[in-house]
Image 1 (cartoon, rainbow, N blue to C red):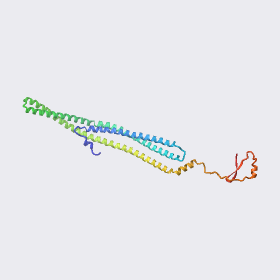
Image 2: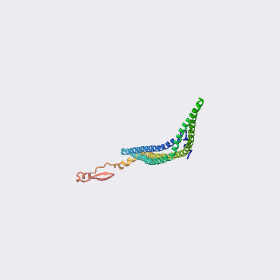
Image 3: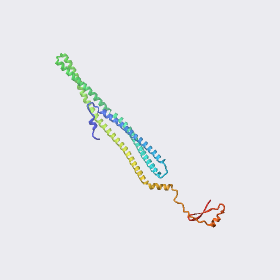
Length: 303
């Protein structure tokens, strides 16, 4: 345990330290719930962002697949889908963390209920010393007033009978005052003992609470950091793919995917008319293929 700050700083004239420490413990449960709500809101935002990125990826896939620029949309689509997956993975981690926080909140409620029962005697001691302190103050004021009244009467020459009556009142006030001084001493001893134990208990509870909250926040930070690393990797991959998508590569892909063939038209040379062949061709047989020349060879044309 660290320095006993609670033990040293929650006393005071009105003895309100117990009330402050008790409500501080209850505020710890409120803080846990608020942290759970914060993480849940972050998860909601991340999920909405992931869905938006998925929608954006579909937009990229619906872009024109024609033209030289078409392959670039595939790079955008893949990168955007990966970013959406990164954020959705963070959502999953945050949802698991929320379950952990909720479990802690339930444990807190049980522990606080148990603690309330354990410190009930301290609350009684606090209420007792506060009550005795008020009664002691009133008895002291009454004692002082009765003593001053008796002295005033003596100076003013009051009768012996009146002085005797005043003396009885002083005696009674003195006895009451002394009894409350004694009661206060007993109440003080009981209060200090109970308060010492309770202050240490409350500090122990608070130390454990803050430590647990720090562990939760560490898990939260770690999840977010891991996501940022993944996003950075996706971005690096995107940049690399874009760098590899050079002008030459885009032109090459279009040529390979949309090309119509590498064979160029063959040359056609002048052919001198062969009279004998031409004569025969004057009355060609019906359906007889006509000759033609290609690549330096005589071929037959199918009608």
